[in-house]
Image (cartoon, rainbow, N blue to C red; front, side, top):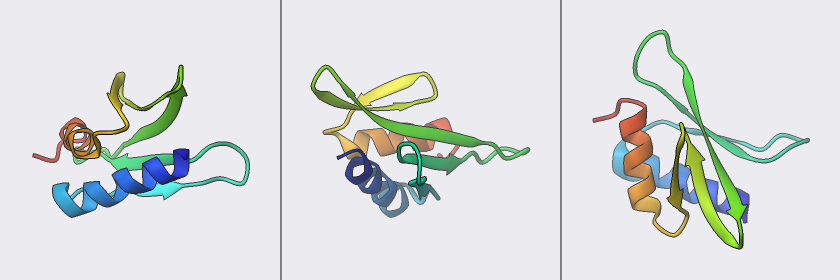
Length: 84
């Protein structure tokens, strides 16, 4: 479920926000979506999908969004990394 949610967000970031992102699924650990910030020096914003009390949330940069609203989350993530 986690990987699927992050893949949906990855797609939406590219499709709607023209925002680059990279979905990483390590051999050990959980999947994470990395989104490069526009400012230099370039840093990356990590986005995770977590199950919190039976509800899935996207967590990034001290913020959270319900996983059901991918378009809103994509817009908020893009704003957080400087894509306007």
